[in-house]
Length: 122
Image 1 (cartoon, rainbow, N blue to C red):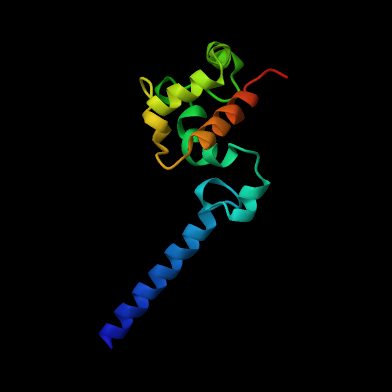
Image 2: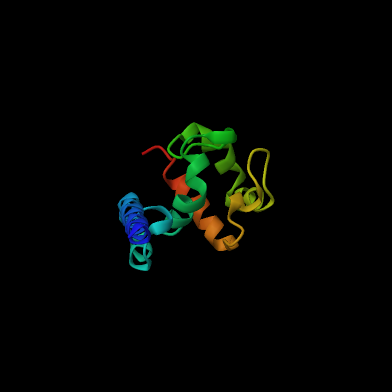
């Protein structure tokens, strides 16, 4: 009897944890985005959400914040190719490829363009 009670407790805990995890994943947000959601996003958006957001939304480690035009001015002036090279090679405060080792160069370029477009004054 004690063994059955313990098994039921584990099952209940597993159910609670599973429900919590499902509730945490917002529809179409971050790594939980489905293929259909990804198809609706603009190029670079999913890569930004999965890998770039943690630093470029907050400015962590000196990263230029998305939406802050002044932080991007000097970088934009250098051109997309230079920004891509810096992303691939890494910079002080940013590891090579922005921690996205599986991202292609084109995916990284798309993420850069995505961030720059959202950082330009209207």
